[in-house]
Image (cartoon, rainbow, N blue to C red):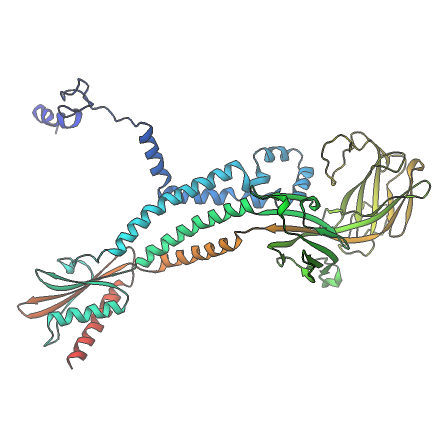
Length: 551
């Protein structure tokens, strides 16, 4: 039924118009103008944004977003932890690499977008925690709430006549003692219908919740501090070689914002021997590595030295740093001589593994000593196929039949241009292939101890043997201990907030026409499947104590 016009006139001024004298009235404040929406100024918008940012919903969303943003760091190699892997990815995916590099996926954890999420989450958690701490402290200092007038409406309600001869004061004092022993905060109250005791426990639940969130902030802080004052470096070390812990000796060095390369701890590490244990089942042909062992000698600045082993997930700890075993491979030892037999270059060169059987590729550059500069792409096979005409692919990862195949280029290596050049890459744009598949002379295939002539009378190359190399990752993080502590607190706080119930219990002594009556009831904040059982247990223990005390 449609409202009458008289009714509409009564309702309209309360809905469509402002009261007389309101500042937003369209006619200057007489109350006859239409209602206009409020406008937020800069301060209002800032408050609105802060409230949205510091809401628990936003904090959870940012936490989930941070977890998703960290995924690319495990899908593609990172400059800070695996620079060689980044180079390999660039060679394997020349089209995709520039796109991923433009969006900083190879530097995920230091990228602009990851840092933005990180900082927003930090601010959101701080904004959530501070008000909750204030409220929690006030709640802890406050007395338990007053006893409800109608306990019959509460969970687990029970009402029984008090044992004969028990006074209200004695019954309430007994209940108070039982509840205090059970860990409740208690207060005795006197109401119009009698004495009562109000008890409350479970604030540890909110404490655990706050510890969880504070520990999350602690992790964010520790990671940030560790990123600023920590550093990582990588070094490839061949058997028999020593590296000194200085920036100039690293293959790559990634210092934190506040790290000076001049203040690195002084020590050295020598790789004596690198061994790999392979699975000998299935006739010893599976080739599955079971154990990697880098036997090293560590020396500190004061001269102290000791022998130890570096294994996967078992780093060398020295002078505040951890030296991890990151990878391994082979380093064929080649000697180059000129036409007169003079040694131009000699020594092992690390070749990067290309497959599970450790078919490896390496780059050798001869910049001087010969008539022309040489760039050589080598393929090393620890177990070469029997047929020398077959494609150089290893059939087993250990050195059962080691051979090396060399494709030789001559020309300008571009080393004098002043542009940094990777030792694992060779630009052949200005080079001519003089030995290999596209040259008159085929690739130079050598076994251990064999020598081959370089084309055009340039000299000779001898395959002297092969050594193992280890790729070491040197890591210093001053905050990693704190990260562990906060991570433990996160788990402890979460478990506490999940499994500690928040309960209120009441016991009331009511004088009635039939004598003294004791009432019991409880209330849970959230789900508490055991609340009625707890109330029943309280009543039974209370009666047992009252009867026993009377006797």
